[in-house]
Image (cartoon, rainbow, N blue to C red):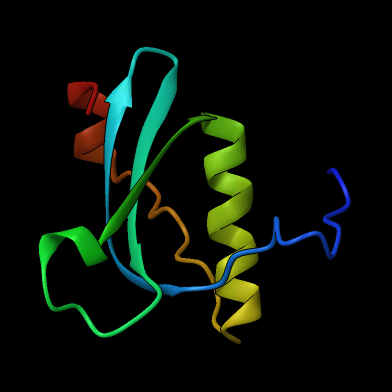
Length: 86
C-alpha cells in the first residue's frame, strides 16, 4: 500500500452508502460519500472500485474484526441439500 503524504492527497469524508455487483471474476463496488452536510447532489461524491473476490472477503473480515463482531459462518448443508446438489 502506498504511503499517503501530507501534501493534501489525504481526504476524509462520511460514508453515505454503497452498492456492489458481480463483475465477472471481480466485484464492482461503488461508494458514496460527502465532506459536508448534503444540500444537493453535487455534495455527494462517488468512487468506483473493482475488487477481486479475495480482496472483498479480506475487507469484509477486516471490517467485522474492527467492529468487534464475528463474521457469519457458512451453515453446513443438510443431507437432503447434499443429495439434491444444493
